[in-house]
Image 1 (cartoon, rainbow, N blue to C red):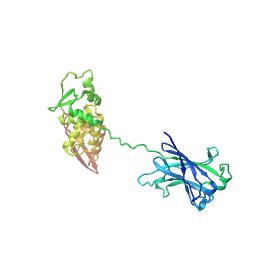
Image 2 (spheres, rainbow, N blue to C red; image 1 turned 45 degrees about the vertical axis):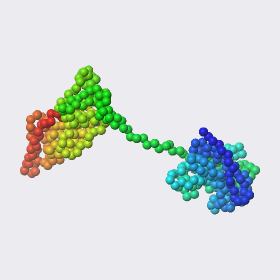
Image 3 (cartoon, rainbow, N blue to C red; image 1 turned 135 degrees about the vertical axis):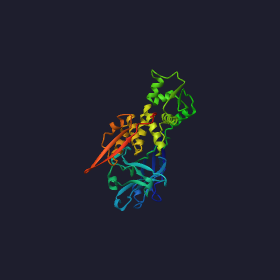
Length: 370
């Protein structure tokens, strides 16, 4: 709501100096201030560089006043009237941003376009004088010849805008996954059970179906297992299925280290993710396994990549094998996957008349659960 306050301004240059009146209309973070100078000729008696100050007014939660220099604020503009908006508050812990428009008013109270000046948005708290305005607002001789000086009186409108920042509200990160994991741990409302590796797991059909197209087909499709009390999953370790459920409910995957058992766990999780159509989890572990290829795991990784259509992992395996000395130049893809029996891949490197050979024995995939 707009509030209008009329106040008498103390604008004196000494004993007997004239006074002025001001009307301030404050709307939100704005103030419209009309500074009326009565007895203009008397104000010229003020010394050079001497300012006449208005009574303070509020805008944007801060206190301001207008400084009027009838004889200019500097020697360089001694023939001009200078006018400034001044921040009265001493502020050290925040930036006080504002912009101001000064307009000479005609006899009807309308701004004169040729004598209307705008400042940019400025930081008043960092200025030594805490003031912004115009030193050459109008030459005195121009004012005195103009129609805007009537009965030794003229008026200047001062429009102050102090931008208000929206309250800074820290929005907490999403914790939806915590609600879902609570649902999984508490088993509240569970309506399906799985027997995996001798352990029983309770879950919610709708959550599983929403996350996995395979579970959706199994639990709600034409061949749904709606009447089965317990669904048994073979060829999968209990810890793998638990990690799978955790991901389904939280979208968070367990990190893996560099140990052999951790890499094997990542391989099984990739296979389980592929089995249940969890592409995001599959891509995560495919990427991680690309960084765990060595001479002892390259063949196993290749079989895994081929079986579960992991193009990047397969490419990483071939890149690793091709970097070995001497490089393998045979078609490893057909050599490794051509049959289920043990394969010997030979490579030759011709150094002049001498031929060096290297045999790499590729064992078929031993883990039936992947």
